[in-house]
Length: 94
Image: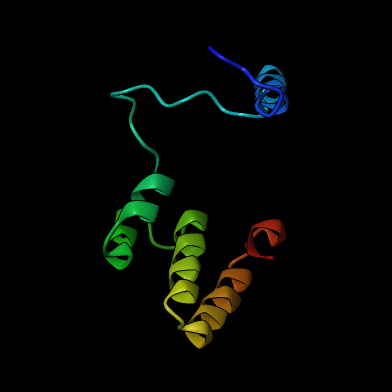
């Protein structure tokens, strides 16, 4: 590997961040992806939401996120209000 003065600081930064655990290790081939990846990469995120248990914290979170991303902000506000009434964790809602 040929390092120049320009690339040395970047290389040292990457090594330092990796050593401190700030950069997650790369995903291995064949390792299953989580719902976050499935949701993010889906062409129809509304359909992907059907995989979640209605009323669960995860369902509320991703449903609100989907509504916000599609511009349905009034519907997202209504869903957040319903989520709070059912005892949502404030950190997850705010």
